[in-house]
Length: 222
Image 1 (cartoon, rainbow, N blue to C red):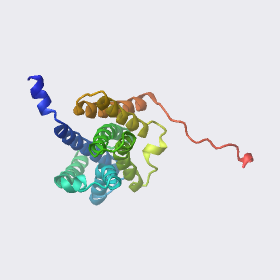
Image 2 (image 1 turned 30 degrees about the vertical axis):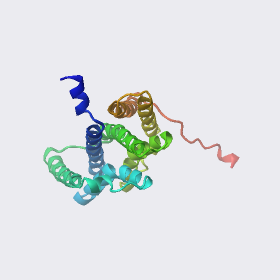
Image 3 (image 1 turned 120 degrees about the horizontal axis):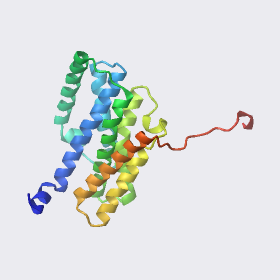
Image 4 (image 1 turned 90 degrees about the vertical axis):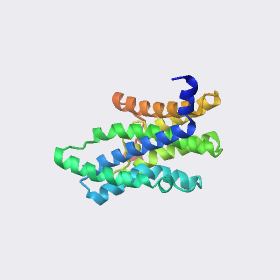
C-alpha cells in the first residue's frame, strides 16, 4: 500500500468516526461491567451503559452549543447498545462471568484515551482556543464515567481513587495540540492523544501512581 493511499484512508473524518465508535463501545462496556457489579436489571444496565457511553459527549455538546448530539445524529448506536446489553446479560448468566472492578479498568482506560482525542478534535474543528479544546476533550472523556458512578451510588472513581485520571486526559489533549502545532497530519494528533491518555492511565494503575489527597489537620486546631 502506497503512502498516498494510506493517507487517503486515514483522513480526519474516517479517523474521528473510528475513534468515536471505539470509544463508545469501550465506555459502554465499562458501564456494563459496573452495572453488572451492582446487579441491576436490564433497564438499569441499559441506562448505565448509555450514560457512560454518551454522557461526556452530550455535556461537551451542550457546553459548545453543538447540535445534533452524537447519539441523536447516529441513532444506530442506541440499537447497538441495546443489543450489547441483552447479549451480555445472556452471556453472563450462561457463563457465570464475575464482573470485577479490575475488569473495569481496561475498557475505562481505553475509553478515556479515545474520547480525549475525539472531544479535543471536535472543539478544535469549531475553532475553540487551545486550552478550551483540551478541557472539552477532558469533559468528554471523564464525565461519562462520573455519571456512571453517580447513578451506581458510588463516589466517582475519577475523584476518589487518587490515581491520575482526568490528568491523563489533560496531558493527552496537549499531545494533540503539540502535534497539530508541529504541522503533523490531524489523524496523527488523534492517535497520539488517544494513546498517550490511555497508556498514562494504565501505567498509573500498574505502578500505583497517586495524586495528593486532602489531609485534614488535628481536630484540636478547629
